[in-house]
Image 1: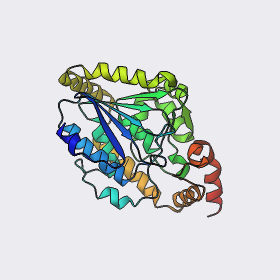
Image 2: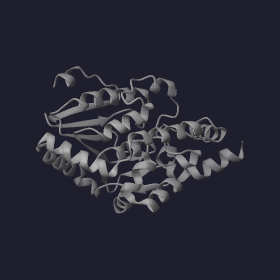
Image 3: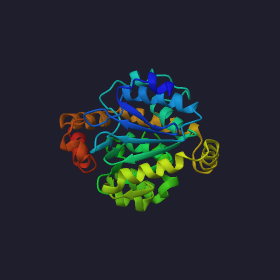
Image 4: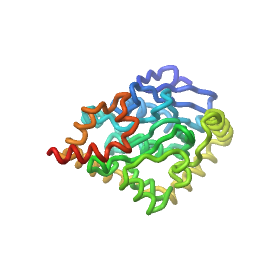
Amino acid sequence: MAFLDDFRPSHLRVTAHSPTLWEVTFDSPPVNVIGPDMMRDLKDLLTELESNSTVNVVVFDSADPDFFLAHYDLGSDPAIAEALPSPTGYAAWVDITVRISKLSAVTISAIRGIARGAGSEFALATDIRFVSREKAVLGQMEVGFGAVPGGGAAGRLPALVGRGRAFEILLGGEDFDGDTAERYGYVNRAVPDAEFVEFVHAYATRVSRWDHRALGEIKAFVNKYTRLPDAEYPLHSDAFWGAAGRDGFQSVAAALFAGGLQQRTPIEYNLGTDIVDITQTARSAT
């Protein structure tokens, strides 16, 4: 537990329920956007987990019942995140998602609120996704900005939901509730909210009791047959940041910030629906 004694994250907290089961809780008000500080915390945590042969299961959840991870912090300076250490050599967000997907520990996203954009991509990079039937919202809205999802959603979704549904999710840019996400294979299971915490903890506890090497070997075989080569994911990031410099992307982002993006406003709650009208208005004004 020496790592946890010294680890002082600013945008998440880690609870060791046992030596083999850790819970990582995102806590970055007002809506849990993924910015440089949270990314720094995640990179430090990943560095520990990559060399830790005791932790079998890591559950990721949120202190905010409305937001798991809202999306990438569009108001931050990308250079700050890119200056963080990157053991893979990839762009900052790709470095995180690729490393999460390759941990020997089993990773579980426990989603009770909104997980859009990079928040959805984070969940897709974990091994298992459990969601609250009533409270979970997932989506990839990047098409509304005129962009490709930068963290690999277009590479991970087809293996989970199939080609046609991957197109539906990525091209529509809409929100998906827990039941629909479960039917599509976007998530493993939608659990009634009243039972959600107990269910996730029971499953995570069960898996955490198995042999660490066996878990790692099972993951390695499944990953071998279902994951793209790591070198594919930087292509997604390059496409996203290429789009981010275009006038259309910038005009949509400006309109969203003017309406209260990254605050607890209707924009954040209804982004999957409202982005269509906002995009059309912003583009017609340029």
